[in-house]
Length: 205
Length: 205
Image: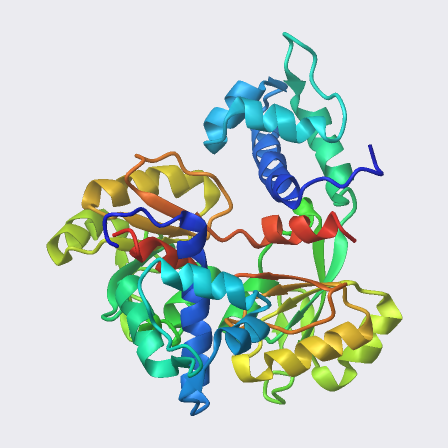
């Protein structure tokens, strides 16, 4: 299976399945079905079965899926069995909220360092971490081999900071800054701009 | 044109075009082209021309697009010429960061009320607003005719709060809470879960 390229649209749904399975696990559920999972997510059961079939055989005909073991398989596929070390750059209101989020670790992301260029913020404690200067960012990321970053700097700084992250070895950036980055094709970027998502809805109002 | 249904995938790209055109406008640019816009966004120029053609004829062959007038047309299409009134429910770290975001108004969203169920938070000032009790939420939303909400409550409360929002007349919800909501089909929901987006990247690392 590993040699066949799985469509990106399928990969994009797997984290949603994992999140719902973890929720079921927390509810004490042991067994589920593609029908139930689909009903909870608003996705057809056929779609779920087809998506999972790209990665092997998980359920048994008639008995459904074991919640914990399917969650474990999805964690393995998504490479989040262990938490990735993550740096957050830009510790404004949003960066601070992100840094204090306690829901990341169980889902495969451990925030290990916070960076800002504002001397008024450097040295401040946020949760269990201390804000460090971006002057030390590249060296620190290299030393610790961090590959994943969250970017929440002002828009005018985003491109330059992102280039520094890539120089330091970052391969995946979650961009909270409302701007488009231009980076090498081997670097993955996902954008979280709430206004874009709102405007996708206002069209229909 | 109005009677033909535009594909949702097209509608989803329009806010991105608008954001980039507004950035160009802020840079003092007057004219652009589908080539330039595409290069800045990592989208093909043919795609941009095809997307825009659903809504009419905007550029002139050989002279490109007027930045401000195309931005104005996109604002009209997306119904964000005037700002929508928006309520934020759940004023934890993230809700507070959202409420303090000053970048929303110029892009068509004006936060007009903040609600939380925690008595320790009610009455607190966040930016120019005061946190109100969720007990007053339905009546307040009805009175002011608000149709758009941002939801940032804990996951265990999200479904019940969302149902109250719908009861109050909310038609579009931006959900910051990492959970799936089950709501009437006429209510639009967009989800912003950073972990889902991260896991969509870790698969490829």
